[in-house]
Image (tube, rainbow, N blue to C red; front, side, top):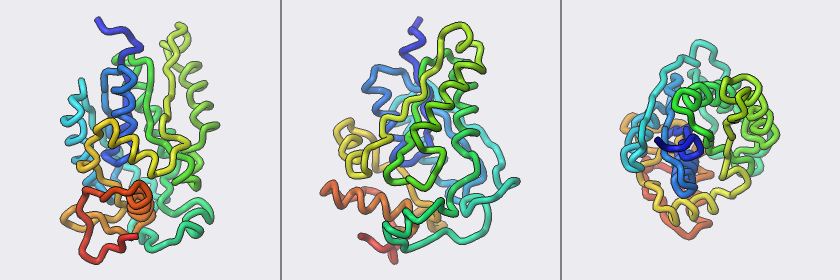
Length: 236
């Protein structure tokens, strides 16, 4: 029977960061238990990409949980309000963007925590990053540390002295560093989807904040992004 420490739940969105985080978990000697949340996001194509990533990484298990955050709204990702496009780096760092989903990581980590207790995993991996997404308050180290304390206080495993670690291995890496790490670990980056506002055919728009950050990262890394972009995409 594998030890608790050899199992890890990975919040797998189907995006670049979570996919690299999953490969880091594998490098760390963990068996993968992937968890994807279909929350009513406009870029629902990422859920199918997460399934493809799970197969490519030969995860022990992959669960997809459906919740409807559109019932709450409050974000360009869960309403019909427009997704910001063509913003400069300075504009992206000018406050919390409209693509912030209220309390999303708290909701996701809570579900991951329940899953981790069920499979007796010793860690939860999340692809949070404070450099590229500094406007998101639930991607900061102090938030993740606080959630780990909550996990220790509020779970059976925690009170029994088997706390579940919250691991964010990409937290302080630049996008280019994340990409280089993913390439070095043979992460299936070609399967990932990062765009907030894809075309009907699932192509990345190349203009939303997430696309621009991703494209800038590949350019800085000296690599070509392997995913498909819309014909009118703005490649930096």
